[in-house]
Every structure is written in C-alpha cells, then in structure tokens.
Image 1 (cartoon, helix red, strand yellow):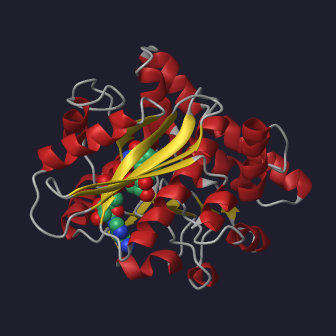
Image 2: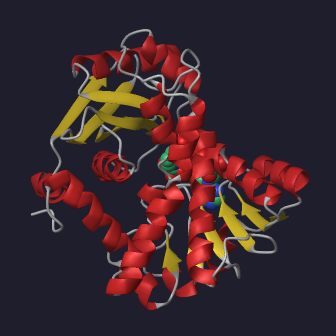
Length: 345
Ligand code: NAD
C-alpha cells in the first residue's frame, strides 16, 4: 500500500469503522498546498477493501489536479464509503461519516458524488460544517458539471472539426444519471443527435422520450460509431481492449478516471482520437461548490465554468504543438502548479 501512496504523492489516508451505523469509510487527502482538500463522497459496492482504497487514492489525486487547473484555492481529497450489503439507516450512516469528516478538523471538505445525494449531505452537515453542497446550502453540483462538460465538448469539436457547432453531430452518452441527463439536455438543445445507454432502463426511457435520443445497449457503447463518445457513468471505460474498438473522433465525458491506465492517453493520441482530460472537463461542479460556499455570485460562477473550454483549448494547442497527448499535457500543467515544476519531481 505504501508504494501506491508514494506513487500518487498522497498526503494522508484515514480509515473509519463504526459497526453501529455500518460505516466503513476511507478518506484520502492528496494535497493541501492550495487550500483544504475538497472532494465528493462516493458510496458504492467494492469487490475488495483494496479496490476501495485504490479508488479513494486515485480520485483524491484527480481532485488536486482538477482544483489546480480550475484555478481554485482548494486541495484534493476524496471519501469512499463501502456501501453496506445489508439494511442500513441512511441518516445514521451519514451522521457517522460526518463525525469522521469532523475529526479531520477541516483539512477535508466533503460533497456529493456517485451513490450519495444532497439529502445525505444534509445528514453530514448536522454533524460537521465541513461539507459543501447540500439541500441546506442549495448547491447542486451536477448541472454545473454538465455545463462544464458541454463547454469542453464544444472546445474539443472546435479543435478536432474546425468549429464548435454541434448541430448534426452524433454524441454517444454512457450513463444518463445526474450529470449525463443534464448533459443530454444541453446537447439536445444544441441540435446534436444523441445515442444513450444506462444500466437503468428507466433512465434511458426518459432520455429517449425527452430528447428524442436513440437507445443503445450498454455493451455497444465503446464500439459505437459517433463523433463524440461521452462516458458519464463510472471510470475505467477506456481499457486496453475497448480502446481498439473505438469509432469516434473525440472522447469527452464527465466520468472520473476514464482511462483504466494512464498510458492509454498515448494510444488515443496515436489513433488520432482527441481525449478531453476528465478532471479538466468535469470541474464545473467543483467550481460551483468551492465558489458557492464563498458566496460568489451566480454569473461569475457560470463564467468560471464556461472557461473550462478555454483551459481545454490551451491543453489541446500545447498537445498539438509538442505532439504530446492531452492527458500528459494536462498532468504537466497541474503538476507545475502543485509542485512548482513540470515533472512533479
Ligand atoms: P449518477 O450515479 O447519477 O449517474 C451515473 C449513471 O451511470 C447511472 O444512471 C448509472 O445507472 C449509469 N451507469 C453506471 N455504470 C454504467 C454502465 N456500465 N453502462 C451504462 N450506464 C452505467 O452519477 P453522476 O453524479 O451523474 O456522475 C457520473 C460520473 O461523473 C461519475 O464518474 C462521477 O464521479 C463523475 N462526476 C460527477 C460530478 C457531479 O457533479 N455529479 C462531478 C465530477 C465528476
């Protein structure tokens, strides 16, 4: 485990078990150089405890890089709750989690993520002030994440196709949950043709009805012929096998850690597929909660979210000029901010 921690340059790793509430949780704090670590709390099933630890570490690192390139005064951290297999009381679970967050004294600020809701964050906020985004403060990050992804897709289209107009472009979306559904709405308004899949058939049905999207089977997603492939479910969608099936010009979605292994960025680059680095593209929600708790006005927040498109354009231009994958270029830019040089050494 210490090799993983050192490789990720992780600052702190905390564990909590509270049998009374069924809480088994991990908090990973990656870097606090720019400010307290801010990152969502994920509550999903894991095959092994090690998988949960690896997920927390990888996600926390991504949050540091995300905040750095979004120009926010925040560090990176992430919490993982191993979803209990049996019955549990949500309120008890999230209050116990709130106690865990509180014990870290504000070095980690939690928020909503896959498997958690704004209501859950309300329970957390009954115990600790170190939470951003709840029913109480009215900050719902998902629509803002979708807006940032949309701006990033336009920037990617401009770079790859010569213009940002999405009319008639085919976009395949995997996962029409909180972010994917809001993204589908923006894309549909922009005149894109949508193909959607989700493991939840009801969500697909709703997207088909509302946006005239065409349904596709989840297992067809990576091999689908489209202009833009938008992974908006869980991570690891682009792996050594699926990368060879891709029939798209751009990969740009909200999911964290879309590349199962970092060197796949090089393979995408070699195949001429433009990859919008996930942590740059999906920073809209973080921007909203980080600035929202500081009472920044809505118009300024929206402007910062739309600027994700400009950041991506800078990354794409540098990537083209140096013949370096966008994923590597983004890492180098983030590491220059976090560690003061371009190699992170
Ligand atoms: P969500 O749980 O609301 O939606 C995810 C959807 O993907 C669900 O509908 C789920 O059924 C579906 N799904 C999961 N696996 C699938 C598969 N194999 N095939 C098809 N569908 C599948 O989560 P969300 O909040 O919309 O987040 C989506 C992704 O974006 C996650 O990776 C999350 O970490 C990332 N993200 C979210 C935010 C945010 O503001 N919510 C911010 C940054 C990043």
